Amino acid sequence: MEKKSIFSTIEENVISVGIVIMFIMETINVIFKFALPDFAGVPAEIAIFAYIWVCFLCMGFCTKKSANIIVDALTMHYPNKLKKLFKWISIYP
Image (cartoon, rainbow, N blue to C red; front, side, top):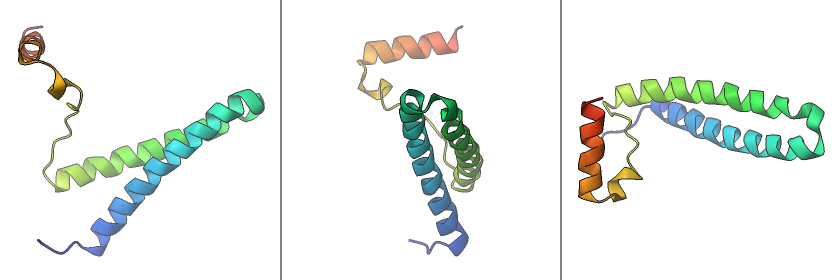
């Protein structure tokens, strides 16, 4: 196992903090919608700002690791016949 550089560690930590900020700001935004409707947009804007940074950092991180981002956590639990149907539909639009 190779040793990670300090920049890789910082990158991973910034991505993690960005995700936590998004979660917290969206939760605060929901609370503000009911408690303080005038300020409801501020936490949402902060969450969007964090989302943009996380997307850019994750794009570079995944490229560096030669990893593809595939979201199949739900579809991998489908029966094989349904998986084949979805695969066929996605190939032949």
